[in-house]
Image 1: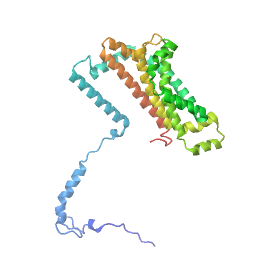
Image 2: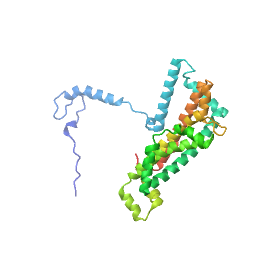
Image 3: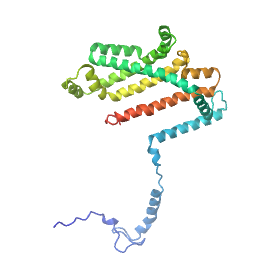
Image 4: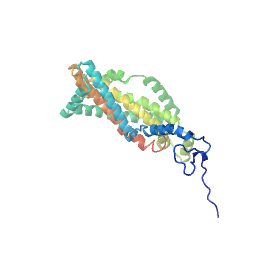
Length: 312
């Protein structure tokens, strides 16, 4: 029959039986020392009791981002009131009123729809071209040399600088805008994708070859899943480049096929000195960017690379 082993307890923390008063001495402690230490212990307990704890909602990323946006809006409102010049800097409330008015009349929504339609076409074409060019670079030496040379030549070239040539080649239509968007998306996405493919471990490559995968099957079954974090980063960069290139092109280009986009809305209201509507158009650009980042890309990352443990 085994005897239960008592847990080890330090004797200096055990009061003698019946010693409950403030003058009761601990073993090994002089008489009255515990009484002198009592105020310090009670003060320490009081300090720990009033320690501030952050609310539970602070742990939510959406709540923190909303709080940051509210602080920025407050700073904007105070700066505009201090400037006291609506032509130079309208207040946040004036801009919000102009934004709501543009949405209620349908003018701003039609401009946004025209811009997003062109953006989606150019972005999809840029993604397809980048994937094909990168796959060619992975499979052949000639493709690798072609990709490296083209990236070195065209990646530093601003897409908006090609707009005059695009207008000469494709005329006054959506094709010109799509051309500059493809240029803005193609090179950063191809560069990020190729860097991700190059970082794929050789073990995965050998596993794919052992299964008999070759050509595009090897690329899309082995390289693309392994390089997905780099590809997603390239998609984000390409989206940002495409969005701002489109707005800048519409500021210069104007209406495409008789219908102006969001950039044209900003340019037109600037000419008419409706500064609050200009800021409303800029706010629409920001809101769309936040929505795409937090609803599309974040969801895609959460369901792929984070779920697979490839990204924290």
